[in-house]
Length: 222
Image 1 (cartoon, rainbow, N blue to C red):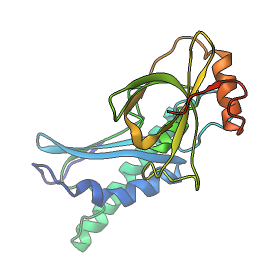
Image 2: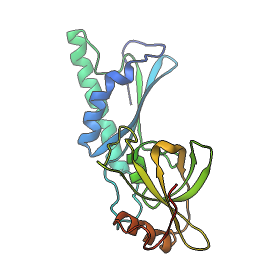
Image 3: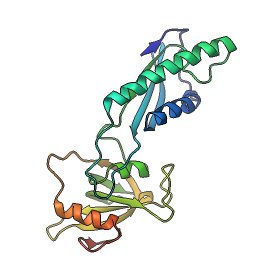
């Protein structure tokens, strides 16, 4: 969707910061969380790219989380466009423009792809029972299934805050549990799978989420 006003060329480093309060208000009112907000130049216009994700995270006995409802995402796009246009008219009258994109723009509202890097505790909680490939800050790698994320005080999603993720690595002897601090994860992505998770790995992670670590899986603190 776009609004045609005066042309605007060149990047605006503060554009995303100006739009963020408005975008967060609308995204959260729809039951989503803002995963990313980017404003970039594209010829004579700007592209405002809004990435939203579901706020809910699976519980210990839930299956892997489904993706966001696309009809609801389309609703967020319509509401953002309507709000930008309405505030643009008001700002034009008052001589300000802090809450809307400047000049011509294209609005893109989308959801995280399967290749979205896991960089926040919320990403890891949403990845419950998903198989991930990660690289630690020391260069070592691990492919394992995501279990509970937590630490003393249950840190928020603004940073790792000392959070640790429990991962179940499948081995011929059964699942081995790793407890990896998020601060030690250099990169991690979800792997696409075409069959259900092995029951032994699921059972080990459910037990870990219930505080029964070691009951169904071998412990290996990483």
